Length: 428
Image 1 (cartoon, rainbow, N blue to C red):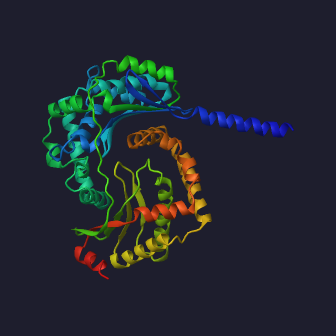
Image 2: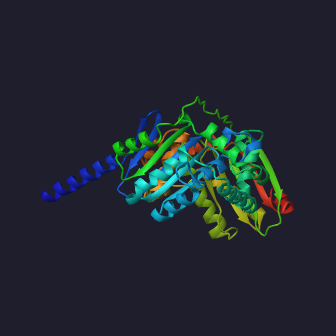
Image 3: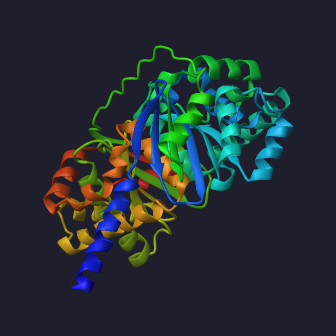
């Protein structure tokens, strides 16, 4: 009897612990805050800025990424660049800023012991960035170097080609890094004006925090640091989601030893009822490709399939190979097998277990928790992440087959490498 009572007590304790670690949401003077209490000895904070590439036109591509990077590195009203960097180094505080397709962030990570020092630097970087000219020049040069690197990296270039062709003539096709010429022409004054006029707006921002912090403690810090935060009208962008239909081939000639192929297809949004079933199906597709193309045929080192999670998502089935025709044929064979439902209940349960394990491993990092919650909030609601495991567990084989049939109705094939060999690969 004592043993039974012990196990019941443990179960109740575990249940209460799980409940206590649920993320909560509240407002502080109009600023939305998402807090995930943890028992970790690290604290992670991110201020999210909504909109991403929808905030600017192609002529200003890269301005937001540079603005957020500079805000986090180029000193503040209360700390010179030297003092700012020395304090960050002394207390092991990591502050960085960047922008992606759907949102931008200024983030801070530190150990709990130095939470107060980290908050002072972080909050001042958000509310009072100085954009010191000398340090701005260094930051800009680093951004330009990243642009050159992205252009030379084949996998990154394939992603850029995908966005350019899927969302042609739309702001959604803009590369958040921008182009070297565009970014190189930006001045500290222009970037500062963009940050203060376009981004620093309470209605466009929300804060995500993970750490051993109470709601009351966090509220007090926010009230003290962000009481002067401006509030201006903000209309969220409208995303035009259209299903791919038909088939299209896109080639880019590049003299490289290995050719890169990617098949781009439809995908549901993260807040869609189809999302979890579709993710498991794409995982089955990825596993099948890895076995067939890498293990069995030896045509590629890292073939697979994934979902690009964003406001307008897509599925990518990809391979890098020296034998494009054989790889293409193998990709089609695996795809058809998944389309016909050639996977078992036992296999799906293994996929669900992988998702559960991956989720819990990911939650071990405070910065990962913040990133996941923030991205989910941008794409619908932070609760999507909180309910992720339960929703995956509910998926049935029929759900997966229905989701695959619903979204697999068109494709864009993107090819980077020997164009002549590539064109021959797609010939029947």
